Amino acid sequence: MKEYDFYIVPTPIGNLGDITKRAIEVLNTVDIIACEDIRVTQKLLNHFGIKTKCISYHKFNEKERIEKFLGFLNDGKKIALVSDAGTPLICDPGAVIVEELRKRGFKITSLAGANAIITFLAQVPREDEQFTFVGFLPKSPAQIEQILNKYKFCDLVFYESPNRIIKTLEIIKSLRPECKAAIGRELTKVFEEVVVDDISNVIEYFKSGDVKGEIVGMVYRQSLGNIDFNLDEKIKILSDKNFKAKEISIILSSLYNVNKNDVYKRVLEI
Image (cartoon, rainbow, N blue to C red; front, side, top):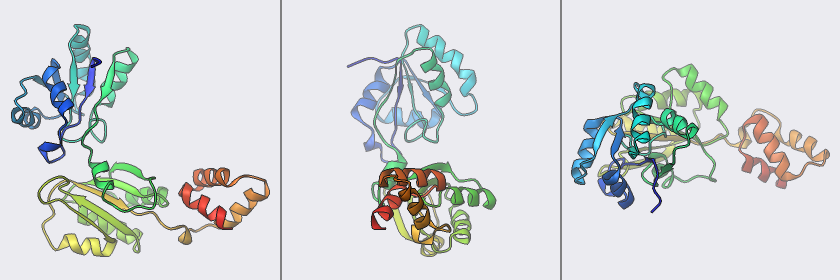
């Protein structure tokens, strides 16, 4: 097996059985594990009998840890990066050190493994494969509105905390009262559930109980039938200029942030 200097290792998002054989092997054989919270990672390591030394690496000490890790790597040591759960660099620390290591020519690889976004989307019906992930939504209604407007023609995927999810959904409802939403919580765990419905029904569902666990959500895109500009007119203008259907869909999706596949279908219908 090819050796690397730095391994990005996904860890389970809930069910410990989701860790891969290769992840266990890497965590066992590297010299150091860089982790968000040593206490959290140690529980995982103890479960699998892994004795590798852990060093904290989180968003508050990313830059100051660079020289320490460079020293280890220059001494020939191997490092694995993990987050508390899921894949590092996906809404978790890691980008700073990875950028620095790539500049310096170190060999880096990322293992396949658990990720809440993909686990969620794999069981949520969608029209196509396109979506936009924005991480954790801001708290301000004005900022949420800005994001919803920017991505209104995309399936918008986000993270949210259980204590804020109802308030966030109510803000979204006030801005897009007819939208459809999907919410997943406790993914891969015993009490996992994914709810897909009109946003009003989703809110009522989660209001009826105590919401626990990390949240992944999606606001379904606004349909082209509700858009506030004359799409057909713009398609005709470009068609008259001899642009092909694929070119038209790329141009209009770029200019107006509409879904490229939806525009392409509309071009073929006209």
